[in-house]
Image 1 (tube, rainbow, N blue to C red):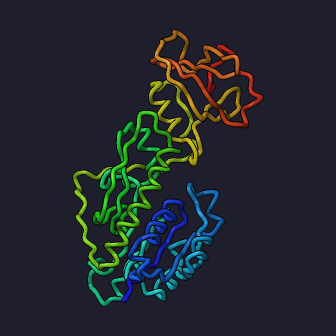
Image 2 (cartoon, helix red, strand yellow; image 1 turned 135 degrees about the horizontal axis):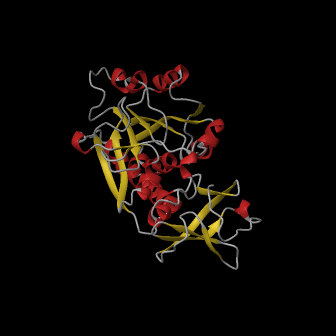
Image 3 (cartoon, rainbow, N blue to C red; image 1 turned 60 degrees about the horizontal axis):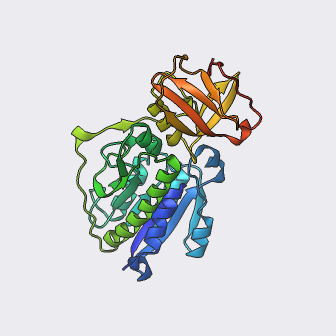
Length: 320
């Protein structure tokens, strides 16, 4: 008998994980069945970085598909209960899954354990848990100057990102890594782990290792206003911030004469200047400013498209 999966997502990472499952040999042989696919309503797109529509993949593979606005609604719980999954997969959803939903596979199998080799609830998180629980995993990895991160397959519990570790895959972060390139690496890794997870679920051989509580770190949610460049920070920290907030994230920015200026790419200059931090010390022939910092300067390479008519003046101090 095939193993029944219910899949919940609203994110591109979820799409790639699902793609990995659907392209697996186990799915092709009919060992796995997608009994239900739940994805987020388009109303969530403006507030969901990486939002993705699942209609096409559901239609292509003839997967029963429903749109939801929240995993916490009673109707969502009813849909999952009716699907009667052996395994519930919730990947790329920025909500904590409530206990009544987490207990659906357990109750359906008549077990007193939420997770076993043959049933349970599974998520993926783009860090190497137990490090980096929480939000904004890709920006934080770059802002913190890490040289590697990863994606973890783990068991879902009420506390965010706290369950046992099923699989992990490490990802190298290059010195010039941007959120755009790291997002792509994480997406590819979700797909690879989806294929690996398919084999585990199809054989009902789920195992895990508990997280080491002494190694837990948590990264807080970031807000768009956190992208303000503070020129009293080191020039390397500014460079990391700009790279960390590249697309699909909101972007780093500064204020020039009251106008918000988005910054897409910068170059670090280590030559020191006596100009106060945040002051424009040069403007290139193409109109790009160079800005003094406490330990060097930042030369802007590209700014947001909306900044094309801005004319920068040497000596003006930014964010004033």
